[in-house]
Length: 193
Image 1 (cartoon, rainbow, N blue to C red):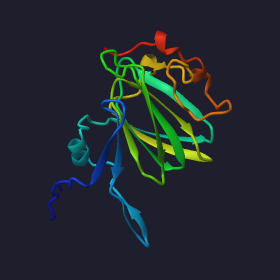
Image 2: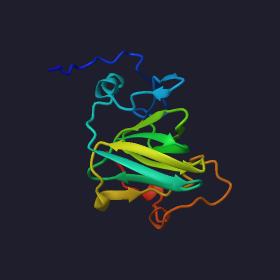
Image 3: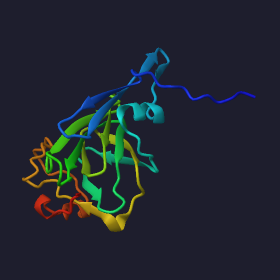
């Protein structure tokens, strides 16, 4: 009988890239490729711990959206979620907004392009609102969450609030759900201590 052995990740298994928001960072996995295709670890608990993600994930989500769909900006006031976001097909502009009152970057945002081609992931810890806009014909977005979806505790921040100064790269009206059209202004939003 073969024993299963834990394999320690090498420090170059995943690259961590800082953003302007403390706690939010980009991850680039090490991709192996040849004439057959590619292989990479999209999640490895040990590798994630080496870059500072130690929270357990309890739910995986898959969103498939068409070009110019804009989803968000969502967060939960109870059962808050940290999210590890990646795209397996297509491209999005992924956005995190800092809702931590004690943070020096409270109210600021970070926008990152994630795609099936660049294989980047974005770690958005608890205390942030999250949303994205689809840049390609369609996009398949996968994200791991640190707590379960709790619709009664979900809040939506207005994606187009001028106080947030998010550069969505729009010169037209995006496709937004009725729920997201009712998002509240940042100044009226519930935040985290």
